[in-house]
Length: 289
Ligand code: MN
Image (cartoon, rainbow, N blue to C red; front, side, top):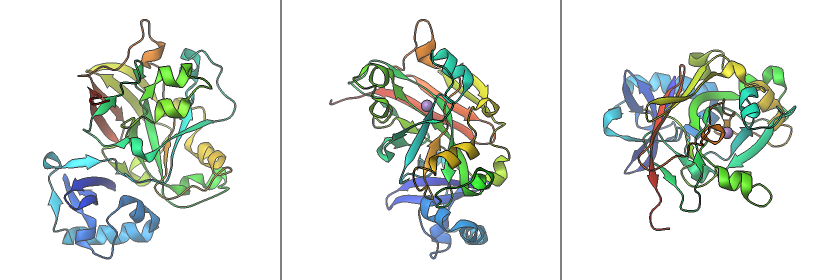
């Protein structure tokens, strides 16, 4: 099953992807919520009910005619993992960590497929990072590794846009500030449920900048897999349905190139992950700053 969140005059609306169209699931069954996060909270019961409502779907959108938001536009948390591909740690000039490196973005950084990445006036070194995003499906704390995948509600394509001059060169190394400028967390187009993804640790992941392949790897290169990350994070905080985990990026980022490659106005970035789709975002300059 695939979920999208569509922007409408009435606000964000959860839709199920059905035969190439987006079906408004709350319009099909008013007892179901209109947000993907709240649908995830209902668990398997919600999914069954949503499937049953599909045939009654009266509000259908043509994907060509609507604007999509991030599939979960209102998560409680956006957690990120740094240096989670061995080759990327090497190109960054640091040893592969022996425990996950966590940081975060604010949910206000989220944008959807097709929306613009805004280059902030405050940064001159904005970089790209292709990432697999895990969407948590139910609340949990102290989740053991062998049950961790039961807590996954789905997967999506993500892009961890990164202002390197903030991340690396500010006092104290401002990882979070450098990663959470508005629009620095594109996700989408869809949330894909685990039954359609299979093994999350064997997915091709690629990033194209203006059509040129800049990153080309596979999630089988992850140092810490999805189950390890969920176990590790849930030792620290409660994971909630709808929480997003950016799992790290493979080699090929702009910072590691000679000369370095930074995003500029007019660029188009595409991140593609097997079975999940392609997330495309144009790049524009900030105005009015
Ligand atoms: Mn990253």
